[in-house]
Image 1 (cartoon, helix red, strand yellow):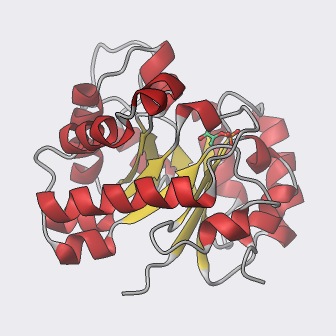
Image 2 (image 1 turned 180 degrees about the vertical axis):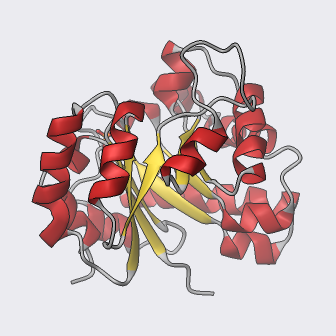
Length: 250
Ligand code: PEP
């Protein structure tokens, strides 16, 4: 089955609302590619203006996080219903920065993934190993654990629509990219894990992105790999270069 590529930006904690609108305008003529799904993962405060600004285009908006409760006394958190009402389609969950700086566990991320599906949001679940884990040779074991816990209770039909982003921590924001072979090896390992947890049809349908210093100069080689269905892009999503990545096949 040919999976549709998904190219998503992760703006992280960048772009004030007015800067966000300026970036959307800059990117508007550059991100037209009917062959791929294009997503902007934006800070919470930018969601409403960015959803408005991309109306009528091919771009969908992702939140960078979400809480797993419906509503109530959770100061500072954002609920799934708020995201849906604001026009959000995807939610990035379990980014290594959230796991690392904000102590999110795979169990927390699992609760968020289940809640996202309940509300019709598509989760982009991040996973990835540290340099130490790679050097210890436990990369795949670690990632399989992240995927298994993250997807606990997720049905096959839900998993088919999900996105997993493989992001080696040592490659994020460092300028060091995993080689296309390294990235493919792990993305294939994730697909095999999904096949074991569910079945071949689910493994065939789920989309697996690579993230970690993906840029215009290396995206073609990465996106040519059979198990890499797209990219989650940090630094290069904040500039015109993002348009080159979206148009990697042109
Ligand atoms: C990310 O934060 O998801 C990421 C991949 O960042 P960068 O592209 O800057 O390495």
